[in-house]
Image (cartoon, rainbow, N blue to C red; front, side, top):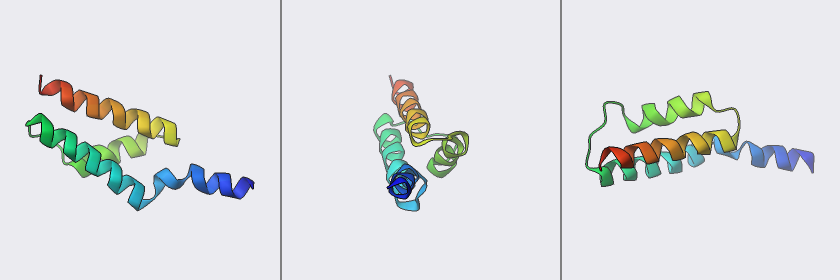
Length: 73
């Protein structure tokens, strides 16, 4: 059972999970109407490199999306 939990805990590191997150970041940027200096891939990779856990990664992504949305106000 422990191995199953480990594999689920690491699902956030998979290419497909990260692609889904990149799509959400890209959507937020598109809705904001503001171009960014960094690409979506660069931004996502930056938060991915900083994060040690799934929760930390998703927290960074959430803050990034909020920041993008606030830039449009």
